[in-house]
Image (cartoon, rainbow, N blue to C red; front, side, top):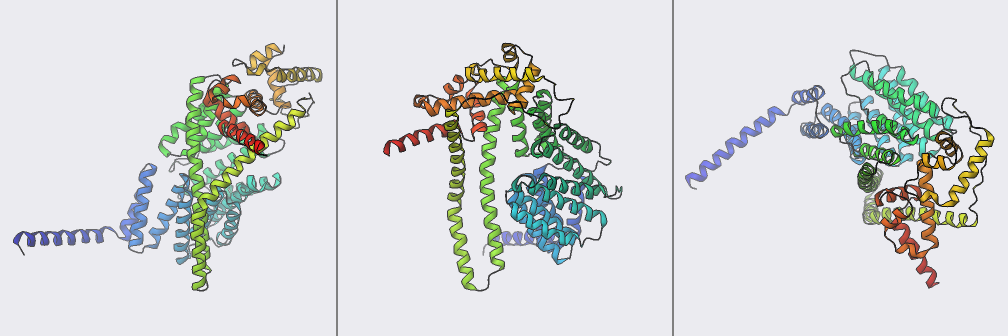
Length: 545
């Protein structure tokens, strides 16, 4: 061997030994604890925090340090959930549960199960989420610290309320009962300057529950109680803004986003734009695409309502692109998660090698077929929406009369509802019925002000009549008329199907192709191009028959 080769070999051995020793000295329980403690004091952006805890998790596994694995898994599952990567959050919740059971750490076990229930609910797997929450109650009842037990029980009740909120459609009293139980549990947590984090979490939870209760009264409760909803929503923002301690920066994005949407729906566009812009500003540091897409939607709707064309097109485009991207990712994530959960549950119950082979084959077939299945299911859902539009067109072709029926609105808030006489109401409904048949709504410059002038009334009266008897604000009412008109034209007059989308948009009074496409999908559930292509396919089928 040459002298040069011997020197290189010795050089490699010396440095290899040196770095091995450095590695052994660096990765210790104490060094991992120091990194975790340092992370609480320093402010990292989300990417840096994620990278740090992935490293801590890896190092902890390397030396089989359970406390480090538990601490890092807790942080990682929350980080991944906050970025919409729920399948990864579930992986770390399973890792956390497994490691915590080795130490009989009931608090960490319940934390893992409750977070997994939240992830499953986010993925639309409400039944699986409900089972996890029931399982979590067993471990929560074994927690000895009273404050911690209240906090975890609050999370469970909140999970039950959320599970029934949309998927289950339970009696509204049941949902409110769960929300109130959750709020009652968290309010029993005592403020403690020696445990700042727990106290901060208490007020974050109160704020979050106020927000959910506000959303409930605005969306689900019948009749809607916008006055109560607004009070809860503002209480939510006030709570998070005036917390007693400031160790953790509160996440105001969810409540700001919903306040923006809430005021947009009421046509209070200045407030809506202000809250949405606050979301965009805060989101630059948290990097939450789902929050950004909600803010884009609010901005697009609000700017469209105040006739700001440039801003409308800008935010419509941003909303559409990001929304489509997130929808695609969600479908893939849900598919991947279902397979992983099924795989782990099946493996836990295998009795012999034959079962292993059979289950492996099933999983393989699922892997091959799942992509097609979810694509096909999505197409079926879209097509059902198309068929619903066609059915409505057929029905309304027989009878287009809109009777000016007086509707009694319960629980009116005197401050928000304008008193209008029965004669005035009937007169305005008759005028609206004529307006709806006149096609004047196709004019690009049609506004609440111009319509009220032509109907010889004032904008406030007209807006209230439309809200009470058509169930929409003026902009949504106008959009509905225009979209119904153009869908009817496309259905009854085949030549319209050959026109460009931009022409159809201009023809029915929209300011741009982008705005028209978004409103069309919002009103019908399908895109204009899909609607037209299906009409053409239906024609071909009729010709073959």
